[in-house]
Length: 424
Image (cartoon, rainbow, N blue to C red):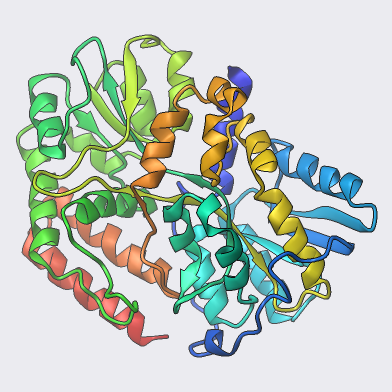
């Protein structure tokens, strides 16, 4: 169990799910470059030659294991990892440096899902649409949206993640059906907590509620802000009301993942929004056996929505072996390889992997996670996502802290997102 816990934490950190959007201010404009990008040479690829995978530090060992297996099974090919730092910011910086220099060092790039559109727009990736179309029925459909930009697919999902509603099973009989019911029951018990600090985690939770309520951030082609809506105001009023009536403690405005987890494990809340990694840690805490997890409930009158994290595998436009890179992508995302990943608690992107007994043993919540992924949504797919995310979490935090009204926050959010879109 302890091994699973550590691996889950590592996967989440490496995938950038719990970290802020990783933009910087000196990126060159790249609008229009994606439209002229070359396609991958074939949907199957050819397993030969050297293939380097640039990826965050492989603390779990699963990526090393799989690349070595690919090399053993394909004697004409040699795959190896180019390990980057654990920090998502540093990973992105080192990838960008190589790509700006048109370095061929990275044949494959393991990209945080929120970077894919940016890298595609800069002209740094090959168009992988043919790879996706050849195999799309194998993938959890929602994960494909994290690879899509300007009606093309620029990467292949590698692993994913989605949040859970944790609830004290010794206090409530079952997970509520709606977010409104969560807050009602939270007010009657020990409250509900989530990631409410001024960072990416707050953007994620706001989007979980906004999408469930039927709202959007961008229009279909990601060219205009759609956040100035009644749905956005309703969600912000709901979140602020939860703090005002005591369903949510005021301290939530300082909580990231770990603060929320520790508060829940210490018995200070009946409900918690967090990522699956917290499940195993909770089983080693004082509330072991007294909590359960469930996919997110629906919004009253709406639907349920999760926000996806994880890695996508993209082929560098400067790779000298794109055929070998495609072959390795297909191997790493095959059912067998995804099952091996699932056995070390790395959430697979292939639907069939969740039926494997070994995956279910390692992740007792496998079926709940699959449901959460199936109701998943990508964060706004845009080259300027970091600025969009900042506009969201900054203004949502203003509301939660009592410094802005929902109407003021939505207007400011819309203006800042519009300005961000105009810079690209």
